Image (cartoon, rainbow, N blue to C red; front, side, top):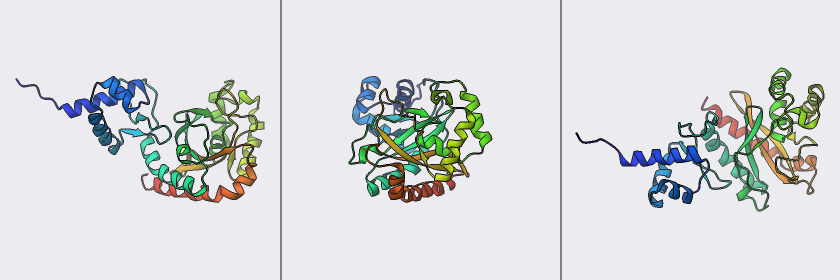
Length: 264
């Protein structure tokens, strides 16, 4: 009996399994691991990207898988991540072209924030670029604080309970009590945008020297992520930067929210 098989399908699955196993990969990585011609890999990747099974990040030009496969590491992939990136990035790119400063897109990921895309390569200002899939502190980051500020205090407390005592991801990192932190959240609500907590200097080994302001992103009326604009901290104070660029950020976030709403 003749064996039935589809070579293109088999090769496409091989690429997805390789991405699931190895994580973010370049075309050269996939060529080496899959032992397929680069022209074939490009053609298959184009189809996988069109079907939202794979994405190529603007920030580092690496390919990533959007679904969970048995060959993967078991790391959960947020639901609708590909949709979010497809919807958000054109607006983030437009924002960067308008104001020149780069923008990162973040999602709430368990008790952390995760950077899922960035327009840093498009900005004329050369800021630190190794950011995609970087996890950052929920309580200290600008996007984390603006997302939490859009929630009820009880919801914020649940994040605190899950990370209580954790000196990397919890309030223990900043030696803050929950009540004291709520004062920071209330200040964020009054301000109308997120900034980094004063003691939070990023997740790099050394102080990254950056400042950020953030606005939330919503789906079905609930905050699930945020969009930042970043600049060197020595350049301008938060309030000066916000006075110049916050309205453009809010317009971009509003367009993203409205487009996401059509998919709910």
